[in-house]
Length: 83
Image (cartoon, rainbow, N blue to C red; front, side, top):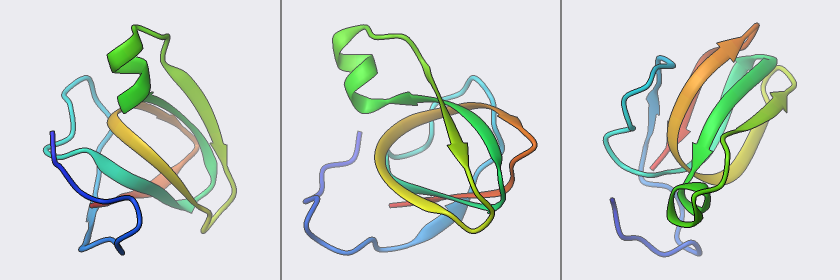
């Protein structure tokens, strides 16, 4: 897992294809070009053993969240993660 400060700006964005593999580094935010629903696993849910969660995005919406996995996308595309 990457170590960074939540107050620093993101260094880069990279595209994500949903799947069961963890992201290369923990994402700081998610952005969807086309809105839909993502099933994600957050850093906190991994640490505490909480269930995966669904997040609903509008087109172009960006949300700050520490995310380790983007497991599935329903309707959402153009998914990017800030690091």
